[in-house]
Length: 354
Image (tube, rainbow, N blue to C red; front, side, top):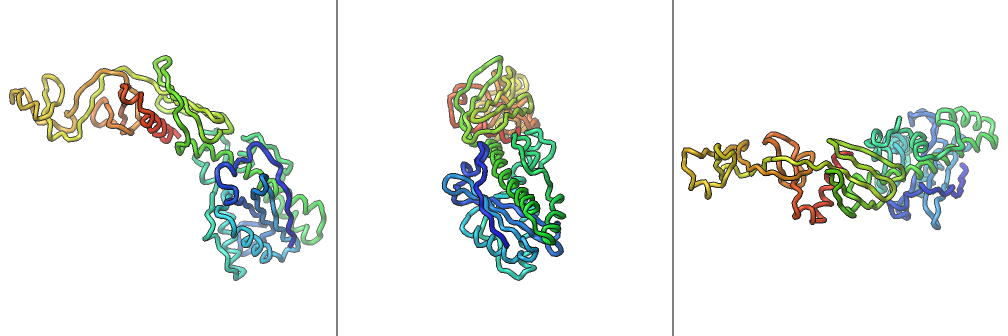
């Protein structure tokens, strides 16, 4: 077994330590000669961690083809001090593979005491939003403008490793270590995409609001910088964002809409006026001009200016008809001057559009 430690090349996208306490998190990646743990070799485990204000990479290399046990033991002892283990599709491959190896080698290690953070699982829902062709790590690195020195795939390097074990040579060793090293660097680079996850989760605040061309504009200040500009939309709502700023652009409609009361049994419907009134008031109306209200007729109409909530929303809203899923908020001072309500609306809209 050989253990190699090097500093990572620091890059503006190496932001993982901004999302988590750097002392709590370690990134990892493994290299194998195939997918089935029982019949293939684990030949390299790499870890990236934050130390003295910079990223460092340690690699455990099964240089003789028989050191799986040793590198697994060293790896698990090393990660025991961390709370989170960061990975790319590690839940799908790396972690199950290592668990099977541990069992096969009759070792007593597991990932039970460390929480996996699988970047692939967190960002796969953003594939279309970010206009990615696929979700391969190298594709995401390219999207972020990261260029690798390593030009090999994991599959390409299987024969390189097998040849190396038979005839050790420095060139083969460097090819194997470089690929894993750049996988780890790339993983840390790609962590900047967590900003989109945080954006969707509502990690922002409404800075100001304005009206322009019959549209309501929410200006947002973000907690985490978006590495690439995004523009997404739904129902003529447009969201744009880049770095620490974003906007939500919502059309204002001027219309007569209906506000439906929930407790329809307490209301009468007045057909002549096309409105519902509470029974305490309707008792003064001739019985010939009132009927018991139904869910569909228990409303009052109101002309005003509105913005959509997409669905039932955060407030009891106005609708065009009872069965509509889409509801609207009237643009009145009680809403426009309530910063908490504006933030709640922005988060509601953002979560739906993402």
